[in-house]
Length: 414
Image 1 (spheres, rainbow, N blue to C red):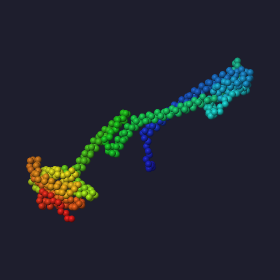
Image 2: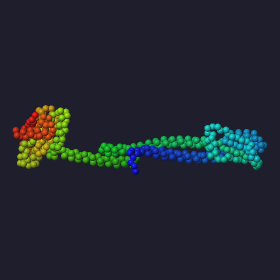
Image 3: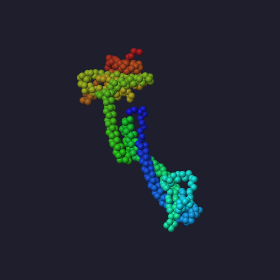
Image 4: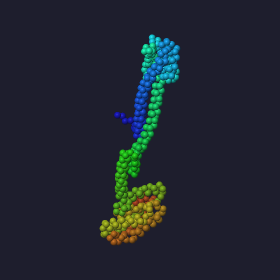
C-alpha cells in the first residue's frame, strides 16, 4: 500500500449532511414524479382510446348515408368536420368492399409534430377499426389513428412538474441541512474548538455551550466536567512546580535565594550592564562570631540568628536589589542599577548599623552579633561574576582584619 504525499481532504459533517438531505429529497421526488407520470400516461392512454372509439362512432353515424349512397364528397366533408376538432391524426372511411371512400389527415408542421407522432405510435398503438352498420348490415368501416398531442402535453407538464418539485425539494433539503447544521454541527464545532484549545494551548478555562439536542448537550456536560478536573489538576501541578522551583532556587531556612539563583541573576545583570555600559555593586556579608554562637548556644539558636540577619538585611535594600544566602553565615547583595559608589557605601553602612541592636530570641535571650561587609564594583573590580565575588570576598576579609562590624571597599589593582 503506497502512502500518498498529500493527505486526502476529508469532507465536513455539514457537506455530508447537505448532500445526504439533497440526495434523499431528489430521489424521493424523482421516484414519486416518475410513478405519477407512468400512472397518468396509462390512465390517459385508456381515456384516449375510449375517446377515439366515441369519435369513431360519431363519424360512423355522420357518414352512414354517404357510405350507403357511395358519396365520396359528402363522406369527406363530414369526416373533416368531426376529425378536425378532435385528437385525430388520420381518419379513413371504407365502403363495404374495402375501397377507400374518404380520407382526412391532420396537417402538422410544428416543431413538436414528429414528437407527437412518436408518442402516439408508442402509447396509442394501432389504429382503431369500427364497422359502419346500417339496419344490422355492415356497409363499411372506419379507421382512426390518434394524434398524441394530449399525451405529449401531459408528459411535458409532468417533466416540468418533476423539475419544479426537484428544485423545491432541493431548496427545502438545503434549508433543513442548514437547520440541522445549527442543531448538530455547531455544537460539535464548539466542542472541537474547546478540545483544540485544551490540547494545543493548555487552556482549560473554556467551556462547551449548551446544545438543543439532548445527546450533544450531555456530551458537552461530560466534556466540561472533564475540563473542570483537568483545570484543578493543572492548578495543583502548577502550584507544585512553583513550590519545587522555589525550593530549588531558595534557601529553606531564611527563604532567601540560594547561591545558584544569585549567580544566575548576577550573570544576567553583568551582561545587561556590559551592553548598556551601566554600573553595579556586589556586597559580600559575613556574620562575626557566628561559630561561637552556634557552638555555645546550639544550632537552633544559630538558625534563629541567621533568620534575623536575613530579615534585617532585606529591610535595608531597595526594591530591585537582591540578597541571597551563599551558605553558612555568608550572604551576598546585588545592587543594580547603581548610580554612584556612594549609594553602595550608604546601603552597606545601613546593613552594618542594623545589626548593632541585639537579636531577641523566641525564648527571651538576647544575642549580639555584627556583619562585616566587602564591596566590589563593576566594572572596576571585576568583569565577570567569579572575579567580582572574589573581590568582594577579599574586601570582606580585609574588613574583618581591620575592624569587625564594618564595611570595606575592594582594593583592586588598576
